[in-house]
Image (tube, rainbow, N blue to C red; front, side, top):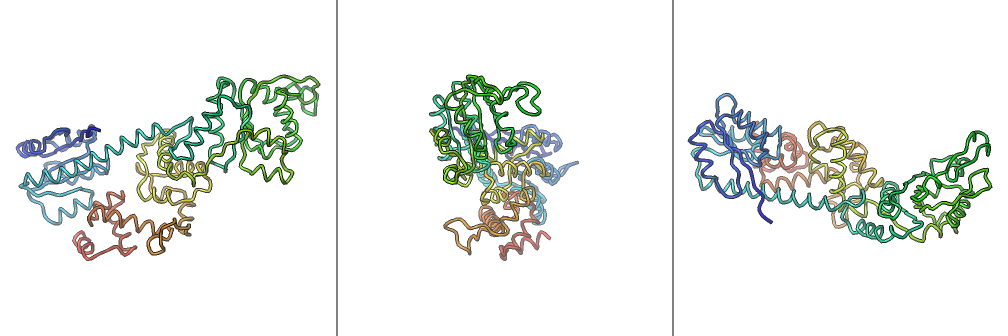
Length: 469
């Protein structure tokens, strides 16, 4: 894979310094844009969206600090390096506190500048390669509305492809929110009757006395209120697919007539003596264990065996946690369009909260959580406070720790994860609090509070904090 191009914008009101910097940094794969006017430089940043910005501190009109603030507000992921001939330790600390990646003093040793820039450029290229790979994976991780690359989902997708051309009846079992409706629609879309109707009936939402009329239709005068003939869903789904969701809630009397319809491929409208031929494929779904329902005489055994000639199971989200990042991205894109908001993703600490949740409501619960976050967010990233309160409440009360963790390392609570996240960010930043805050996408004051809260302050941290104050 070729290294992706990296863009850098250099802003300096001194043309000689600008030429020196652009010449010193000129290398293959690096696009360099220059500006002597800071306003023009900012316009270039907003237009080009570079990975790195190098700006002088002291400039007429707009200072380098102002440039830094506006770039951080635009995109905190851009690495901003300030340079100055009159820099002080105080101004360096202030720049880092406000989000700068580095602060360099003039005159600049070119070898040192190239070394520092080389590290930033390579990091930018790593991010670009990672982003391109994520995009490729995301594009190949969709199957008929279902998103994921986990073994459980790949197995389900493979079985759907195999049975779709041949099935007459299918039973889909799985917990609520696992996507049984998506699996049913995928079977229909890949079947020979894909151009026909895909008709849905939620059995748990139908009044028992109207079940037969809904499924098979009725003739005028067959019961009180039957003022005209009505076509049932079986007839409407002729040469297509009828999806019976939550079939475990179907009354026993209706189950008997459904079995007869499946066997004979004909329906008898309520009040009629003349059967009508239909050609319908039936997909049934349930979150109940129908074998237990059969044993308890709550579901007909003959209908169960008729439906379950082919049986699929949609896996719960807990069995496909590796699909979580792909599903999060899918729902972020969905709600970005729905709410017309520019949502760039989730902060690392928000991702930790979602990764540690047990997801009893499965994909539907995740969808609701991301939708809530997209609606509540104030910036362009979903943070912890944007997530539903129930997620935070459950984690504060302590969910079981994952296997392999110890109480001292990670007790499963949100506080322990937050401490580990802050510690990891500080380690990656080699103790640089401003860099750690940028990695976590929180303010430096918030980082210092969390360091103190979790006992992560060392002598160096306290000294730097005192200098910043």
